[in-house]
Length: 298
Picture 1: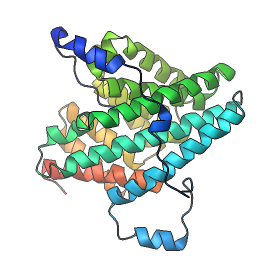
Picture 2: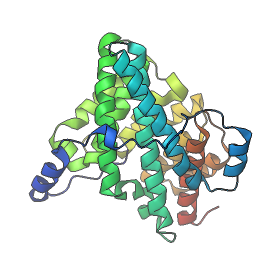
Picture 3: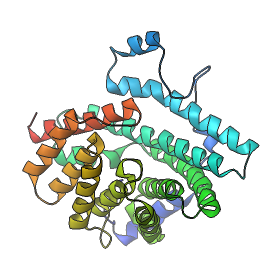
Picture 4: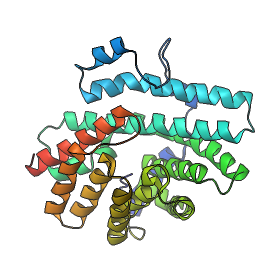
């Protein structure tokens, strides 16, 4: 998440009206293609056909597969609505469907601005089309709902707490910092993140620490904490040296005025290995490359 700083109060009423409107039905957002299978190991022929595509082109194809997984998870939950496992699955798949949309849209913005200065590259995520943000709102509203129900069934589940924090974070991003701040979403996001960190900061490649570090380093005043954010991201990186941690640590270092340290982290993201879905790792590396190009580096 990369919230914008608060805008003048006189400009907020219309924004609040737009942002607070109910999100559209999640069924209208998920668009799995016909006969598309959820993510998994690709048949050799499909893998070979994808080899010549760019990371963004591959991610565009994978969006249908991710959406198929989210659709399947929601259908399974409808058949067993009180199942903790089904609730957790739905929360996870809805988040992945939203997150991939943001990354793809961010890279599309950057592709349209090949000569953008670094500041524009760093805030590209904020400038994705409103339609994408509305899709994310729909997905994450549904995801927050199922994640809250999972937390109610198992308050000590770090997985449920983490997905609730992720969905709330993306909801705040989609609404914009000004409206999210005025609606009191900041403390709710912060509280959900803290709950996950307290349960297990190392869970899922240190995802709770990563999220807290990103939130602290990007949130507007009074929630912003650059030193605390960098410390969290450094801890997360020590636990799991994956491309996303290098990417976010580079952003936090640059925000603190350490351009050299930022470049070193972004360069490391290009060579780091990672877990999770391969196409997300490729996109994280593409985002690091865009930062380095704008900085005049590798």
